[in-house]
Length: 627
Image (cartoon, rainbow, N blue to C red):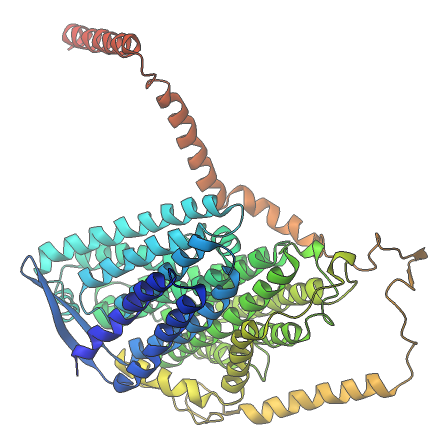
């Protein structure tokens, strides 16, 4: 049975090659192979659901066994990511429909990216994980390059940070290989339990840098906004709902399974009932929430709003996981599932709007509610989930995170998390308002809903967000198994919510949801039954004494929350982004001067050689005189 683990790993690679080869026959044949092989893992994975296979050795290199395995945490991620990849593949077929060879390569690269993600999740040794993790980075680099006009800049920024993370993790791997003499997760965990404090701390920090870069946690988030915004829309979904979560998965696996909280507690001082390293990570998560939220509020690009929102939501997950309590870990793992669903939904909706209108700039949008009603409803459900409001799934995971902070007696961190929730409502309201409400632009009079097949990803994720919101016991089944694998006592749950237990009040989500929806129904009835002004055409109106024309909008998108710019401006001067840009500027300037040396003229090279010889001779002579 273990051999089928290798088949699960290889399925996306075979599928990608077959789909690419089939493109020589016809585009539709390519798409059929593409979708079939994206769907096959759903058939393969149930065999391993919530089972644990520690080691399946598939190759030996330099005396080290490379191995695969599966556990409840990785099987949960595999199911979730397979769904996202399949839905993204549907979207990609339309997005790259008329792009010829580039579309064929995109299909191949997305299939291979799924295989690379599977490799990271199934790895049971640090070398296998590193190989597939780096393959994942290379494939993301190629896919991002097929996006919008700033895609090349996004590529370079992503690969720069990916290389920083890769070199950091490689240093940790080499250190462990020399010290532990083995690359297996089990053997490394055994070595770390008795290793010197310096080795434990150094290796954890080196690994954490790589994971947190992939998870776009501040201050390692710099690549995220432009990469998410400029990547193809189907790829943006994968970046937010899969690639980011791989970093968070690895953080949870290494922090709790390889290193372990007990090890940190034993080696490091305690701060407010937390090990020092976890306390620092809690504050990094909290700052990621609040800064990511505030910056998302002032964005004018729809995809950049979602990108910064994604940064903020990663902060929630890191904060929850680093609490190191059963309630916090449950909230963090549940939010990984929920965020993948509702953020994927929002990226699909925005991608559909771009597909029909050709723009992601909010001031150029508006009034699409009647043109794209399904997209509007999907976005409405998505933003309710982001804001953490019932009956959508974001409510359940955020509720667990808030309760975990209360249980841990962290009032400041709780306040930051709640502020982040309030801020998230501000930017998601701005998103739906600027795209679907207000005045329709004349150029969008003929816009219509996206094709039926492109509606499938929206419908599936919207229904899942609603289902997991009303019945949290479904995703909690997988979360509890994963939590037990990581060494925690799973929290109690039932299909409809959470019973009374230490640190958590009883919650019946369907009852809360019905009450909330009933209030909306009453408000809606009052709105429709009470007398209202007659309906008129959007231009048969006036605002502030000014008669509206096609050139005058009665509501605005540009500068929607402009007062926040004044709040954020001082921070931008000292942001990681500004430091990064200054460093890039320095490298470019140094490169420009260095290029002047390479003129291709022999006399120039000889002249430089003579100058260097004279300088070194003077240094030698003066050195002898002075010393």
